[in-house]
Length: 401
Ligand SMILES: [Zn+2]
Ligand SMILES: [Zn+2]
Image 1 (cartoon, protein in one colour):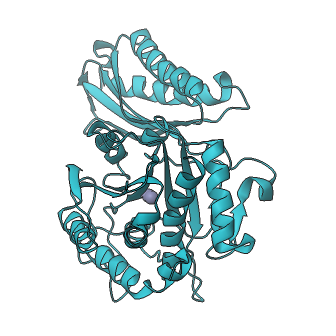
Image 2: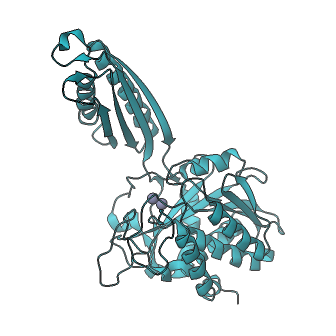
Image 3: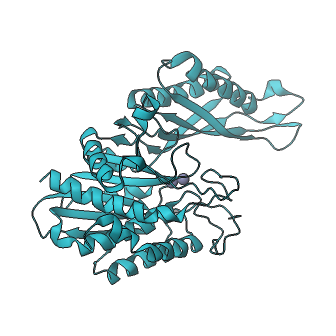
């Protein structure tokens, strides 16, 4: 058997076994001991020598028999801290749930690993398989880059797939998003407001941090409406505000926490600066002090035009034009995901591509969105996903010798 899609299809039962095992043992963040052990065991069985290069981050290498470049395939493995409510026989046994479909990505990349091992002699270069933890917390890719996944041999291009539920697209289709920034940047901010507490009957003797926090909240909303170019996306959301304990005490301090999403670095840097300046300025106006901290910064995933063209051509050949969707051409404008994706830490270093696959399950019931405790995905797309991964790497290396 030489056809990659047929090879993947003949492996359907095993792909389902992988997916269901991972689904039952859902783990979060970078603490994936059961998942990592399973992935390493499966890869070892196939003849790989997988290495855990960062906490729960697994690298396996295939090819290298023929001279060529190096292509990286990434599959993320972490779940969400969410109690599953699907009622499926293979529901999660933990308090976590694979509600984003990363169990699919891991299973599909294991499927690709099997195909690639069988085709190892034909690979015109080297393929690195990146099994990544901590996508939801935007920490896993960064840790694996730091551990050297892009080095030795140096990675020349990279690709990932994400399954989606409820997309208005033909079921089971492979979706291409066009070139450029396609996922939002993400920064979290934390504002500590320090005032001076006291009796609620004598506010004049205090510096009320709740008053300051309220003004900061209102002022931050004007960054978007008054300071950002209307053509640019700049979302500033305050997701939590805390302060005080009861009605007649003015507290010493208050706290705000929020997120910033944009699609370009200039806007991102500008908003971060304005969140800091506005918070500190308002606090000082009211005789308080604001300390602003940022974390979890994640850039946009940027699709490289050449990798996109190469993988699009190869995928068209593999699955046919019916199941290969150019979303930009379909919508007449570039599509941008409002969420963030930490594959961005790969795409900022090497030419990269993010692919999506529709895996909506239409079983006569409601189709739930991702991150919902009742969402389920269509397992019949698993072979296509495995084949798209393997095929893209082989084709890109052949084309870019
Ligand atoms: Zn997610
Ligand atoms: Zn996800």
